[in-house]
Structure formats: C-alpha cells, structure tokens
Length: 357
Image 1 (cartoon, helix red, strand yellow):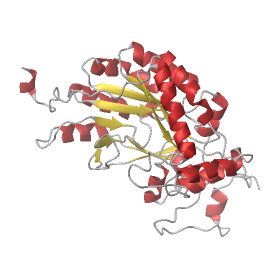
Image 2 (tube, rainbow, N blue to C red):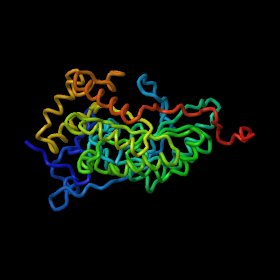
Image 3 (cartoon, rainbow, N blue to C red):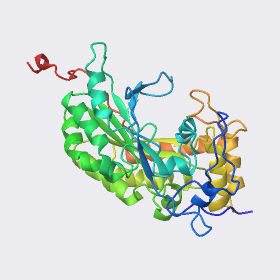
Image 4 (cartoon, helix red, strand yellow):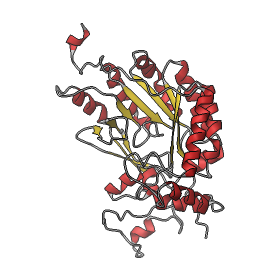
C-alpha cells in the first residue's frame, strides 16, 4: 500500500509523536484542538515557525573517536531543508516534537549565539581548535536569510582569528564570501558543500528546500575562485537511489574547482529509520524493498549500526563497491586533497589588545 506523499515542499511523510522518551501523546478525541488542526476538514498548509532559544553556552563539545573535530556550533535547531535521511532528526524528540515534519517546520533560532561565543572565546581556559558549523543542522538553511546568526558567528571568529569549517547544502554560503575569503587567506576557513545528486527532480524529493544541485556547484566555483578551500561531500549515498551518480558528481565537482571529496553511505539512527522507510514507500515503491535490503546488508542485518567507526564505514560487498567507485573517481579527477590543517596560532581572545603588537 502506497502512503500519501508529504506536504508540498516537505521531506518527511510522517509526523509521529516521539515515544523513545515516554513523553505523553495527545490522541484525537473530537475536541476544539482537533478542529484547529484542520481547515475545512483538511490539514492546513504546513508553515515554518521559529522559536527563540536562549542557551547558556553555544560551543558543543564531542569526544567521538571517529569525528574529526572536538567542538561545533549550531545556530539553529531543526532544519527546513527537509532531508528525510538527516541523522539530526531524533534531537527534536528531546523537545516533545516529532523528528518528522516538526523537525523541518518547527525550528529554533539562537540569536544570542554571537555574544555567547565571544564570551566563551574570552575565557582564560579556552584553547583554540577549529570550530565546525553545520555538523547537526545546516547553518545556511532558509531562515538564515533573515536571522543572519551564522554570519554574526563568522564575524566573531574572523575578529578573533579563529579557524572554522563549514558544511552546507546551500549556496547562501556565498553571501559571506567577504568574510570567508579573508579568513581563508590566513588559513582560517574551509567549506564543504554537500552534493548528493545532479538531478534537480531527485533533489527536490531528497532535499526539498535545499539549493538546487546546479546552484551548489556554482557555490563551489565561487568559493574556489575566492581562494576558499572547498570540498564536496557525496553524503549520503543511498543504494539504488543516488549511488549511480557517484562518478558524475565527482566529475562535476572537480570541474567546478573542488579541492577534495568525501562520501558516507546513508545512516538511519533511531527515529530516522521508520521515517526513511515510509518515505521510500511513498516516493519509490518500486524499489523500496531493494533499497532497504542493501542498507541492512551493509549494517549487519539492521537498519543502523551505531558503533564508532562502523557507523561511517559500513561493510559488505555493496558498501565495498561504492567505496571503490568513489576512490577511483576521485583519483581520476584529482580530488585527493584532504582537509587543510587550519592555523590555530593566530587566535587572539576578544578584547586582547596586546596580541595586536
């Protein structure tokens, strides 16, 4: 049985109430709340809402042995891009919100982030290491156009000569070329652009509110021309959905001026797995079983393998074939450069005037 498609312009097809944390669920019982959720008996258009979040700190630390950074900043919680496979979706369950449609429509913004960052960088105990932006949700998702929190964060980092890495699916990153170019010339910045397909129609299905593939390639070209180290991420690769494009994406990224490339097969942690299965049934009913068969074969018979290192390096013949094709394509097109070692020696704490001499 084929499920109904997601609301127009959205990725997830479900908005199931989270259950992993035993939070209460409101069942429809015919009261006024149910009526408020409909317009003329049908679900109203799904609109994006933004709630201000006031955290006490903004730098998130991690000690994962298979992650190449130890600190990151997320200016937003939730992501309007709507990528159904996003591994960050389960974090919305912490707020008693659905990792499904709520994750991509009920967003949180942190306008205090620049001030909090400046305060944390000013602590005597702070030791400089590159800060990663875009590790959980995209720092250049559509609401950044108005909120400009990511740009303000970059302004603080630039003032302090603090290195930064950025991962995004949006060409909006080029809006901040003035800052990124200046930082890159001091070896303080590198950008990763995610390109999962060259097919605009497939991109609308996989990542409905992200920039089109052609605009992402144009962003790679602009960043490269401005002297910013730029890499392409073919992540995630989904068997029988977009993995046939590995060679074409690598070739297109190389032509646009990318310095290197990375690729990770799809991961389906926690609530992402049922969302992804329902998405497959809605959009790819002809191959849903085959896709999941390949995924579970790569993950030891499960939807997901959460173990360190294994989560980024699936096993089995299909995973090995994708890896081999990717590496051969990168070698053929010269995309063999690894992430640059950004310079931490230039860092000066906010207000540290003596470091200017």
